[in-house]
Length: 265
Image (spheres, rainbow, N blue to C red):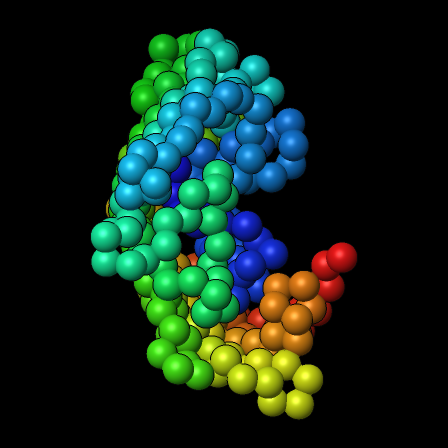
């Protein structure tokens, strides 16, 4: 339902992905995918398509969700999850629509893109002991990429609001609510330097925890990318700096360095 959820990881220009933190990925509040071990995937059905040659793209789906029978604490009623998304591209201005089911972080200057999307995800949870709420999350996001001669700037923004997210931990029920947002960009030099094309990518993310615990999380990632053959062969080197508010005894602020190599055949 969000751009973060629908972006293929092979196209990430920050290779560590969205929501990088020891506190979990805050862009997947429902932590779906219990049967496929992936927070962005789940068993279900999706109806989707394009209107007016991609001017509007719609996606509507029903899924097992986080609180299915696999969750024997909050999934007692095995309720279904529902998600939907609408994405708009001003094709009349010359921008190319993203017509596929998934999205990309960058098209490396091959097409000019401007999209705005809104989405919604919801599922009811029930512990079988009288505690029940409907978890819900809505999002709005935007992506712009345009080639200017040898320079290709990319800019993305995203906001997500999560409420009534039930979690069972340490034999205790907690109900979470938070707001998360990110801004990220990449500047690509679209000429070969040595073996590939260099780029600089930066992302800032913030989790605003709206519970009494007030465990805000801030993450800044900076990476140098070197595209040897587009997404099929690339090298990425950079760091993620993560700052945690109201840390537990086993938590601390940290910086992780990452060297990522990707080859696709």
